[in-house]
Every structure is written in C-alpha cells, then in structure tokens.
Length: 194
Image 1 (cartoon, helix red, strand yellow):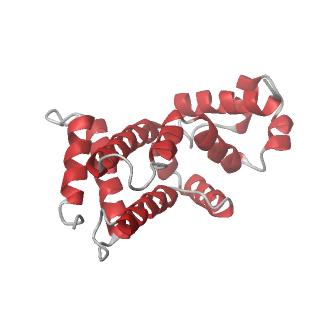
Image 2: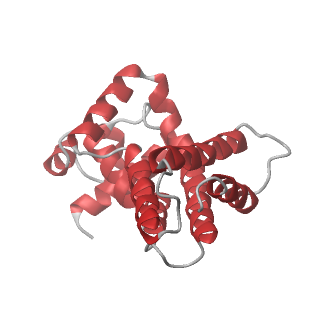
Image 3: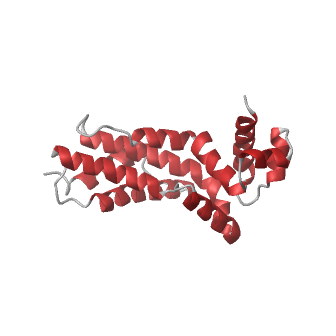
C-alpha cells in the first residue's frame, strides 16, 4: 500500500473518531506514521484530504455512485428509484457523524466548500446524476416529457436526507429504510409517469 493510501485510511479513521472540525493534520500524520509534510506531498490542504477521503474511502459514496449508474429503460422504474433511495438514506446516515462538526465551525465549513468548488465536487452531484437518470428515462417514454426532473431529484434525495436525520434524532416510530425508500419512490413516480 502506498503512502497516499495509508494517509487516506488514517484520515478516515481519525475523521470517524474526532469529526472533521476536531481533527488535525498532525493527528492524521501521527495515525498514518508519517510527518505532516508527507501529507502535503499528496494533498494541497486539509480540505483536499477530506474530499479525497469521502470520495475514496466512503463505502456509502461508492454505493450511491453505483446506484445512480442504472441504465435508462432497464428494470422496473419504481424498483430502480427505491434502490437509489435506500442507498442515499444509508449514505446520508453514515455521513452525519463525520460532517456534523464541520457545520459548527464556520472556518472549516468555508474551507471545505471552497475545496468542493475547486474540485467541482459536492452534494449537488448526486442531484445532477439522479436528474440525468430521470431525464434519460423521459427519453425512453417511461416518464412524462413535461416532468420536472430537477425538482424530482431534489425531492427524492431530500426525503432520503430527512429519513437519515430522523434516524439520528432517535425518532422511535421511524419506518425502516426499505419501507421508506419504497414509499418515497412510489410517491415521486405517481405524478411523473405517463
């Protein structure tokens, strides 16, 4: 395993234990067994390292990206959207603990947002990918041609985010992810199908 991979693994571990705002590059370097200078040979700054960890070490991010690669016109549309929704709920749930502390520190949040902008990355990419999938489904005739796919993507992913948030807030009567994902997909599709 190369130095970069060791650093990413160590950063993922430190992020999970301390949260984004409370971790330092010194702690990451120490966990990786390298100097801070070694980190900066592979990453321009702490925010660049965080983005790389999320992209490359977050299993939920990988699963969500794969779920959004469904080919248009294949499978049952409700099943496809249910799978996307269930994956999104899991991704958001897993991400909350890691990212929560970032929102408490304006400087960390600003730096992270700037790094996402610089790398043309960020949470909006999931919305764009889902809207592109829905647009492709429009082209197959499985969705109405006048359906607002941008709004539909935002509604589905927003519902998934809310489900994950409610889970963290210990809502006792929360339905399970599969049931919620199915309900979200069916509610979304009702006005969109021809």
